[in-house]
Image 1: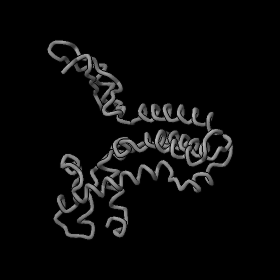
Image 2 (image 1 turned 30 degrees about the vertical axis):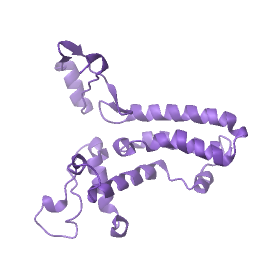
Image 3 (image 1 turned 135 degrees about the horizontal axis):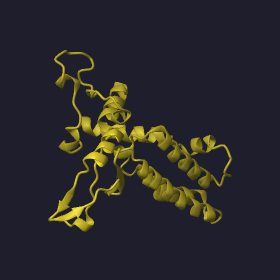
Image 4 (image 1 turned 60 degrees about the horizontal axis):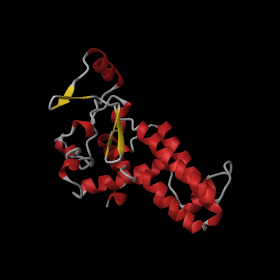
Length: 222
């Protein structure tokens, strides 16, 4: 490992992190070379923060997507609507879809930031003004809300988990109800919901993925 190209981070709750950093800060080194701890690290293009809120990743996405959309808005007059739509899908929405299963357990404020950017994208495609009502534009484009986009991505991932279409490291994240309870019920094939006490736990993939899949009607799971 090359210490100059390696990042390290300690993840936990705000209280645990405060205790670690003030009373017992961990020290890491690679072959004697100290490795400083970062508050945000990048892994395969996804920014991970200490509390796993993915707030820095959302802010980075919004900044990148807004910059692209502002440029497209300046040249919109020279583009057809179909060409603009193609550019928005390839340059903007592709960033929103990338690894969304990993970072998709966002709080509402982060979802609102992304939704405003998607609304901006719809206005750019239609050549609409800033304060034009956006709902008809989204309906005409047949776009889902950001919250529903993230739910669809999670549901597709859970379908793959259910049918063994993902690596075993992913399937081991989830447990069936019949594996922890001997009682045979209609919910025996559902995913077991782990007990969580924090909002961060409820936003985790293991919890939100299991809960979303369990709530889907059987006709959709086929």
